[in-house]
Length: 62
Image 1: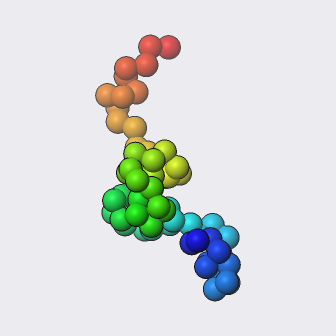
Image 2: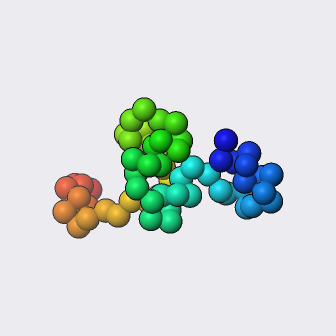
């Protein structure tokens, strides 16, 4: 729905439900916008790069 409305308004192709998150929006609101029952689903589809802490990196044994 977001992409279709964005196209009609001549907005950039990359506009989507997750644009809301990329601009500081709340995860629960983004889930409602995307029509997801769970914020976990929204997180799966969200393409924001997640910050990885040094502790997480140190858990890898290469």
